[in-house]
Image (cartoon, rainbow over all chains, first blue to last red; front, side, top):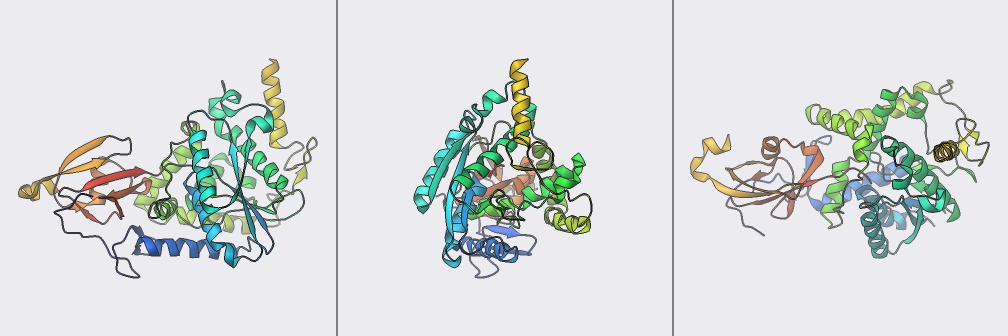
Length: 315
Length: 76
């Protein structure tokens, strides 16, 4: 480690006075590594408790891509387990078959589940639809995230049901939530903006919970870094086609000039849902006419996609 | 600003960039925030380690520090 001739002017932790590792503008303070870890785990526990996200006896299927958010989610849930009565965890990794990317993140996921002693299941797009994503996307690069999102959600749901899970947990963070609000507003998709995937439990509909939804992306990265758990991995090669990439960049710029923008946007979803309660915007779910999965139309997105791909192959 | 005000304090600071490139910068005492601004990097999109330890944007850096800028890749 290089020695510095510069006086070590690092802001102190607001709790213990040790050198800080992060600034939390919303809380107007700095935290050291130890108290950052405590803070994030406490906040995730509060999100779970206040949202009644986990019930005694739940079997939680954690969507584990091997990236930073799902890594943090699995670490935090594993640590909170002793306080969650009779709750079990199974990690599920979906292999889309993206060359030069997914195999690295899968190795990271496998190493993590071995380290934490968590059951781990793998499923693939090849299992689900008979093809990997790279092949499916030939000539359709711009639809990458849409197609991947539909299939990954289905793969995760099916694997979670097969494993006996009662709830699915994903690592979506505050920045993801804010980006989704803005993306759905830009698309004029109000029903999707207000949809609550965490509501309702039934044999066919597993609720999806987001314990990290109140935690900023940078906090999650720092949480892992200070514990030598930060996965240094490439970004998905299809990111460049995504509206989300542009929205992310836009929000990062706005947040740095107008601190609090991301949190306000992320929290606005609940408010908008409240205003829309009881209106036609909140459309009830139907069942897909082909596979029986819950959907908002006559066919679910996966079945519609399957038809579209078959039409593409036949033409 | 830092180079002009304190010319006698110039030392070479190694900066490891997110793309694995390395820059050696003549840098007087200044903050992480100032360095990121100089490099055109949004602090919200990266973490910065000073001699291996994570530091917030308000931390002072300079001298013969080794600075590593780590991009926070999107995707969970």
